[in-house]
Amino acid sequence: MSFFLMPSTASARRHFLGQTGLVLSGTAVALLAGNQALAAKAGGDSANDVRILNTALGAELEAIAAYQVGAESKLLDKPVLDLATTFQGHHKQHADVLAATITKLGGKPVMAKSKYDFPMEQLKSQADVLRFAAKLEQGAVSAYLGAVPLFQERELSKAAASILGDEAMHWAVLRQAVGESPVPAAFVS
Image 1 (spheres, rainbow, N blue to C red):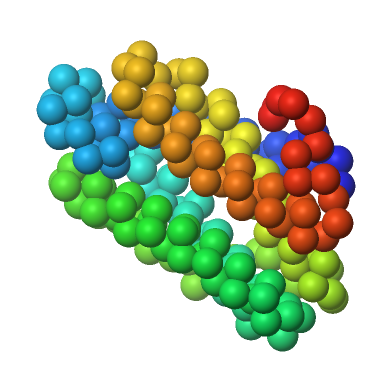
Image 2 (image 1 turned 90 degrees about the vertical axis):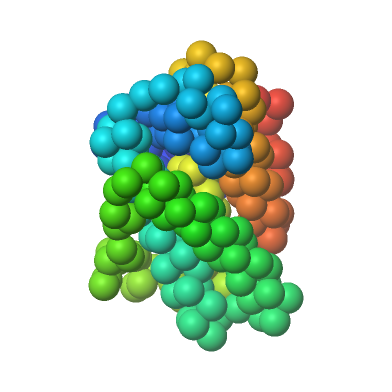
């Protein structure tokens, strides 16, 4: 697997960033970080924050569904299945916080799609499922990497970097699980 963005990951990142402008607004990240005072200081347009958060929530819901596909594929050995459900749990936690934040801002959280367009025909082995999950995590890393420097408040960048760190750990573990170098380079692009 190439370290650099695969075309589908790059286009997913462009779509995600294009939909949001920023992955999360200053107010939204402050709320996510539990810092109400910083959220008030950051100000911001609640309607725009809701739109941005709903885009992020949509991506988390897609990740939850993708891990469910892997779990139900019957292709994963027990330890790998346990790992997949753990990562799915992380995405569920992210989704719960995003939905609660959207509600706090007066918005209505998006719902999961009834069907996602996953490459089911390409998932024929445990390694295929793991590579698919790794590509999704790589896309998340890339999206947050693009967002971190956009925040003016240090605390907001810190909150986004925390999420980035979680996604990067998922990506590294999944790469190692398929026999690839978990950290192929000194820098992530």
